[in-house]
Image 1 (cartoon, rainbow, N blue to C red):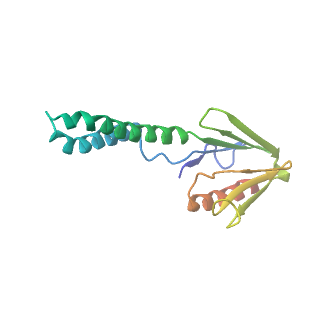
Image 2: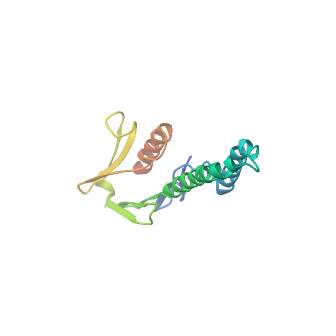
Image 3: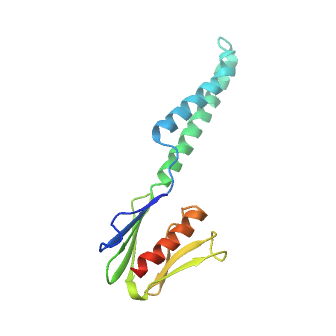
Length: 160
């Protein structure tokens, strides 16, 4: 699962770190772009020595660049990290965006409520923390099953 309790269950503070899936590492991305380029070149090789090659070559290079650029943007957009810290009195959530900007939320742990919206949220099993007049999402980038498991683990952590 793309989240992990950094501290042990009995320790204080408890720290939970969440991040989105990243199923394509940089080496795999490079291999994919290279393989795509090679596959696109197969029909172009038949045109070697022909003036048609020079007409097609810019479009081939543009297609490969488009694939590379899209994969790079997707990888950079997945650089989200959420860290939830629970101590005896306070709950604090820090979200680091892909741009490097951080957003923080903290609340007295006693007044914090954990809510799971089955169907009413923007995504199924939407998990939020509510307190101090604000409601913040946690783990929105996780799959449905992972959000259900996260909700159960947060309930257990709050009871400790």
